[in-house]
Image (cartoon, rainbow, N blue to C red; front, side):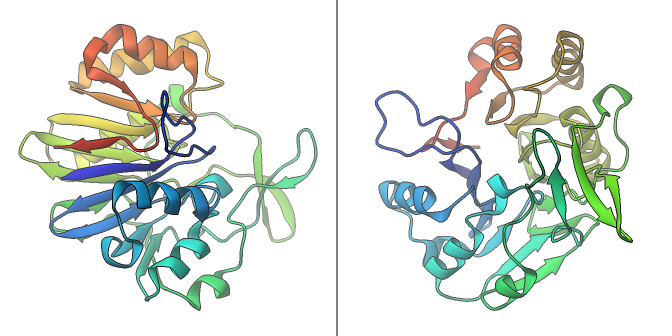
Length: 275
């Protein structure tokens, strides 16, 4: 199993790769390529793929969207056009809902195009429950059992029957792969709570060994208590290695660095990880 970091908030030191607020991974497993999220736009992803010797038309077989936010979905149409053939796009059924913030002003932060535009280029598979994408690699489906300490409103809203409602981001889904060394869990922003996601993956697969957790953990605005609890839970769950960046936040990254030492890795564009 190989994971390419196609775009991330950080490009690394003296790097030819481009960075962008957002995230995109290419996961290779069982002879197939799964593009996990598409950043804000296709251009930096396609640039970085060229540097890595990756051709979208031959290396991407599926696209998985972890949730609706623009920094994870904005590059979708450009990527689909670069692929040049119809592929399967896997996401939650609610991903095209209206999704917005009201502070400091009303602004849409959801997927920045219509469902019909995607369907012109790809086939949608909108599944709220766990799904095996390729052998040994699964969508977690939506995470309904969320740890109490990871719950809380982050200031995003949706519309239901014409009424403004708080949005709990139930479309937040991750990918989990079974390897001979344990689970490798890939998350986009972990709005469901990264500890909740890891525990869900363990319950779903029956595998208690967690080889690595990769992605954004959305602790950028978290207090010290939540950060400390998250690191403690990771250690108690036996998570062996941590790869994080994007929305994790500097204080949380520092806490994981202290706890994991050389087994902590800061994500950057162009990074390649193998298991």
